[in-house]
Every structure is written in structure tokens, then in C-alpha cells.
Amino acid sequence: MAQPTQPYKRSFSSSFSSGMGSVWGGSGKQYYILEHKSSSKYHRAGESQEIIIDQIEIGRDPKCQVRYDESFQTVSRRHAAIVKSSNGWKLVQISTTNPTFLNGTKVERETYLQNGDEIQLAVNGPRLGFITPTGQKSTVGSIGLSRRLSLFRQQALRPYKTAVITLCVILGLVLAGAVGWGVYQNQKQQNLLVANEKIVKELDELNKKMATETGQSKEEMEAYKKQAEKLAQQIVQNNAQSAANRREMNNLQKELNTVNSQIASSSEKISSGEKKSLSDKSSGNEVATNENVSGRGVASASDINNYSQFVYAITLDKIEYVWLAGKIRNTVNTIDLPQVVGTGFLLNDGRFITARHVVEPWYYFEHFNSFDYFRFNLGTLKSYNRMANNGGEVVFHFTAISSTAKRLTFSSRTARVNRTTDRVESERSGNKTWVLRKGVTDDTDWAVFQTLEKSGFTFNNELSTNLQIGAELEVLGFPYGLGANEIQITPIYSTSNVARQGLDAKGNIIVSNDNTGRGNAGGPVLVKNNGEYQVVGIMSGSTFAKGRIVPISAAR
Image 1 (cartoon, rainbow, N blue to C red):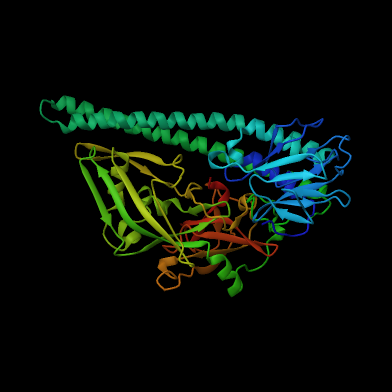
Image 2: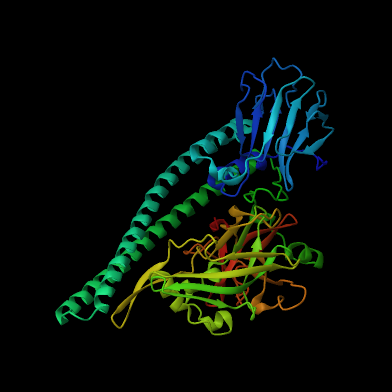
């Protein structure tokens, strides 16, 4: 049954700013479709209209995103609105003279919408069907970029067309350049990856030849070794080129962040000092400024209890590996010796987030050994790296447990990660040349898998890339397993201060102290904006006693 919610107020951020979020990256953002059941000057019966912003108005006013012509006299100029809230979409009655009906029932003030509902404007007035797509087509990211830009122009700009037209020209030019250059750089990266894969196969063939010593002359063996060394050197050169490409992409991102900041600054002036609400937990792309960041964050027991339910202790259940063309298969059960290996957390779009080095530790064997990670011997992480990158497969299985005893299970195979910046190297051992892939401590230290959960932390992509020096951050997690060995699991609270403006050269947030005790990695890093906590980062590690945090905007 539909329920009343908060009073309606037109919001610049819910229109223009949420539209920008949809254009730049709507992979986790939901949208809906309005099906026109009545023909008008602007829409024919049966036409579907995708809505990608968080607030629209319906009526005869030219500023309305869903507009009717003057022949519909019973439709008010600003008749009704559809607004995103933390619990879904709501239909709001604006007109004081003409009613709005939902499934035949008059809307007194505002009510929540459900998939398949029918909206009618006035008695015998035009009707609209409300549809929420499901599956792979349920997010804005499933809509093509050109279509998203068109919808942004039609929906986000309409109420503020005169004021923001200059900003839109800037946005269009920057976006066009960024997309073109990004495609070019991504293609270069893909070419390097393909080249490295080809070299790995050639090395494997050489290893097979060198392993068969019978019939191989000394000269042939020396030639094989020289060829293997040459191939290994090519891998190193490819990695250097890949790193250069990465630096170019980082520079481009910094330029885009600057433009976004300018647009946000101009937007504040346009909206005449309107306060951007951070309480809408649906978007994750809210515009916020460092001035909104208040003092110490999780300051009371009620706050801790409210947010700790979204923080999970991650334990390792078992390891499966396949080795030497499938001849060796083994499962190492660790469930009898439960050990917290990291922290994870839920976002309000259903994503479960943790650090990649928690999920795939064998890519980070240079940073810690297997004893440090598990407290008992499961074989070295380096050996798992060899298996995973020389024809075998390694899969870690995990259980994540919250303070409310909710359990989520996932594996390194199902988690989504970013390996594009890994270093590919070779190592000689006897007559064998091994390929090793090493994760680096940049902004790729994240892992994501999608859940069906409906609640979690609000997150702020924009603020995560431009925190000011001294900004206070709050961290929740399970350092060294603390808080997860009791009957009631309770994450441990700690604080940090931002040590430098924005991000470092590797795309990380650097903080003043090290909150990265083993088990805390993957935990949420939060700021308090206008009384609400929002995630801005993922605890990653430390460098020279300075904490290193991956901005939440990097996790896709």
C-alpha cells in the first residue's frame, strides 16, 4: 500500500546533478519508464519515455519534463512530480486545483509507486504507466551513451535551460574529448594485454621444449634460453608502456575533476544558494562540498549501531586450485579454523565492496606472506600466483558476516576486479620460466559483487576524489579480527585525517595515520555531510605509516 513521505520541494541536485551522474557513470543507478497511454502534441499513445534523473515534473508548463499541450485543460501547469527517495519512487501531488489518481485512487499528498502502476492526471485526464525494468536492463548504464546525453538534455536541462546552457556546452565538449581519448587509451591497453598474453603462450611453449632435454643440443638449449629472456624483456617493455598510458589517463581524470568542480561551483550560484540534500540514499552521486563535512563522525552509540549493520567481517572458508593442465586438483578447507581476512560493506545500490587484495591475495604476495594472511600454513601466495598465471586456476571462497548475523557468500571467481594495471613479469626456476602477475597499490585495490540487498551506505563519488587536507574521516572494520571474535559482531571504530589535497599519483586518498591493521582492509571510510554519513573510500593499506584509501568512485 502506498504511504505518505516527506513534503515535496523542487531540487536542483535531483535534476541537473543527478542527470550528470547518469551520464558519467550509471552502472549501478536505477531508472524507470513512463508509458504514455494518451496521445498529445508531444507524445503519442504507446510511446515509452525513459527517466534517468531523480526528480521530474508533469504538466503543461514548458519546464516540465513530461509535458502536455494546452488542449488538456484539466492538466495543471505544474500538476504532479515523481521523485526518488530512499525507499523507491514516489508520486507527488503539486496542483491545488486538479487531482491526480494512482490506480483509480486520489492522491492526497504523495504515495510510493510500484511497477505496473497507472497514473491519471485529473478526472478523465491523460494516463501514464509506471514501469521499472529488471535484470541487465534495470540500470542507466544499460542505456547507450548518446541516448543518455539526449535524455540528460531533455530532462535535466529543461527546468534550468537558460541558466545552465553554457555549462552544458562545456560538459559536451569535455565529454566528447574524454570519450574519444579514453577509447583510444583503452584500445592501447587492450593491445598490450593481448601482446602479453601471446608472449606468455610463447614462453609456455619454450618451457615445454626445454623440459624435454632428450634430443636437445646444448646450442638449442642456449637459443631457447636467449629467446625466453628476450620475451621476458618484451613483457617488461609492455608494462612500462602500460604504466605510461595509465599516467595519461590519470592526468585526463584530474582535468575532468577540475571541470566538474567548476560546474558544481556554477551550479551552486544558479540554484541561488539552494542546499544540496545528502539524505537521498538512492543516487550515490550527490553533489557535496568539503564545507558540508562536519566534525568527528560516528560519535554516538546510536550512530554506530545504525551503520554497523552494513559492515561485514570476511572469513575464508576454503581454497580450490587446479594445476598442471587439470592433473592436480585440491581443496584446502579452512572453515574449522575461521580467520578474519578482511572487512567488507554494503552500499545502498546492492553492491558489496571490499579490497581486491583480500579477495585475490596471491596477486599481492610481495606485500605479505601466507602466514601473515592466514596465521597458519596454506602454502605460499607466490605458489598460488604461479598456478593462476601458468595454466591453472585458484579460487578462494568467503563468507561475510554482519552484526545482525546476516551472511553473504562469494568467491574470488564471482567478484569483479580490475587487473589492467598489474605488472606481468617472468621468473626463472631451473629450466622453467614462470609468468607472475603482481597487483600494485593503486586505485585498483577494490573488489565488487552485486547482491539483492536493498539497504546500505550512501556513497559520494565526487567528494571522494577531492577531499581537502585535514578533513576528518571515520573508519569501521575488524583490525586483527577485533570485534569479530565475540557472540555479537561489532566493527571497530577509528579515525583519520586527510594528509593531502585530492588524490596522489596512484589515485589514492592519503591519510595522516595507519588504520590498516590486518583485517581492517576493505572496510568503509566515511565522512559526515549535513548529519549523514557517506562512504568516500575503501581502506587499502599503508605507505611509510600513512594510510592509503581507494576512492569509492574507482569501484565500478
